[in-house]
Length: 220
Image (cartoon, rainbow, N blue to C red):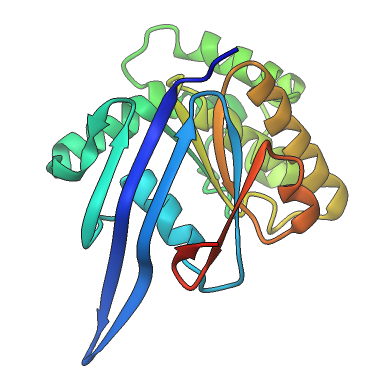
């Protein structure tokens, strides 16, 4: 089956000014990611892989270059448009689970669906999808690290994002939980979800469809 281009990045550059010193985080990235791909961004610490993920997720703005996501040139969006685009098109999973401790699993997953009258029904289905439907009424403090990350993944899927972005999603998990989370990503990808994952763990990266290696701000 032919895949459709979802992300098109051209000559993407990011420079951070640290006082009198300019730090070149990205040095001309050219990259295409297709709809339905599971991509792993890999590279040493400081290589620019998380910066690239943040650019794709509109969490940061490029110094120069272009990013087209799902047919939209996001380089020219203002702050409100970027926030709206993120909400509709992106789901985020981070190494720190970022769950609200005063909410149970169901409430955490329902949070992004604030305007949806059936948000709790969908949240319940998503918890079943990620394998912890029986933990809906549990609070984060009552869950293991792997279970908390599953709740975070369910929350990231709440608004049916075109792209799931994961930044070191297994960094705070043990080996067994890490493997389970990546296998969950593979299952989601098998159902058509586009996933871009930053990881420094080679064994986990190999489970993706494609590894994109970043070094010194460039694709190698």
